[in-house]
Amino acid sequence: MDDTSLQKWLKISLFNLLLVACAGVILRYKIAFSLPWVDQKYLLHGHSHFAFAGWITQALMSLLVQYLRENGQVDAFQKYRFLLYANLVTAYGMLISFPLQGYAPVSIVFSTLSIFVSYAFAIIYIKDLNRISVKSTTILWFRSAVFFNALSSAGAFTLAYILATKQYNERLYLAAVYFFLHFQYNGWFFFACMGLLNYQLLKCGFENKQLRKIYWLFFLACIPAYLLSTLWFNLPAWIYWIVVAAAISQVFAWIKLIAMIKKNLNSLVSRLPKFSVIIFILVAIALSIKLSLQGLSVIPSLSILATGFRPIVIGYLHLVLLGIISLFILGYIFSQRYLYISKISATGLFILIAGILFNEIVLMLQGIGGIWYVPIAYADLLLLVAAFILFTGVLVLNYSLFFKRYAFAHKLNE
Image 1 (cartoon, helix red, strand yellow):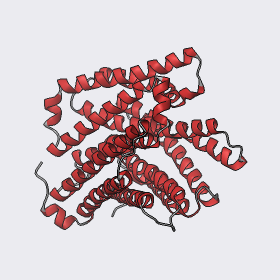
Image 2: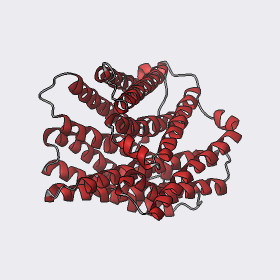
Image 3: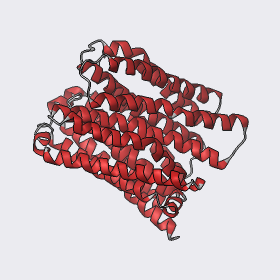
Image 4: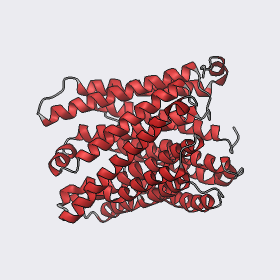
């Protein structure tokens, strides 16, 4: 495949998603049954790092480069080819090294190089955004996305310092972990996806002025919203109320955007394949749940209760990573016809959705059961089944994309 082809990079990203799902099955099997040759903690590090770098970051970087190409920079993929390969190499380096040795010299080198790639991408990409003659809110979303990606590294470097010096402080450790996760999930991932959405809404005739207001509400809330994860620090009252305002701001911005979309729903739906409409509705529901839970977390007692039960934390992280970010990327790729959709790939997507829903339901029940000290029978086995469903969905999706002759012969009616 041509190195300058968006299709190539998206197929690589989706294959990486398959490896993420495979690691997820092994992790769940290790919990439910005996698998002595696998170090659970080491594999978990490899699974999460590769999910971030190999799947989501690889896909988002490719889509952001495509935006440049669609806006006059026809040689964009040729220009970014080295960085796309560099990100891919660091992702595979982490996938291999973390399961073998955990946090050790080799894995730390690859994770550090991954951060440096994000720095280089941010610097070059912002310069290229500035070259686009027509200024729109999309550029603001993308500029903020790559900035937050770079900013999240402060959490990673703090973790590295703690591990290197062996000066373990539980509060500082958790604050660093949540800093990295927040500016990845709610910064880089979310702002990049919102930029892609904004790009398509502008094509449908939405007013840039109104979309800009929504951007600023989310942007101004992003940094203080990090403190939602650190309410156990007993923050001063004035900082706490800033955090509350940030949570309310995001909910208000989302309601405002939904109202705008509802007014123009018919013109939007007419441009999309039916299956994409279903996916985007599910993403909207998942994001609504996420923002609602985030709003409730401003109540310190609820925040401490939620973060104290691992199934709730894992369920929340998977809700964002799978139910919002991953589903949005998949829906966006196929709705824009960057990859052909067939009956087989659509089937794979719906199997994946079923796995996500099943996984979230079991984790939710397990979390509620933990709060009330009521164990959920066969929870570990059910989560293994959910992981296998997720893997099956992604496997079918990859099969449809890599075996084009069969997939194209069964192309889905749009």
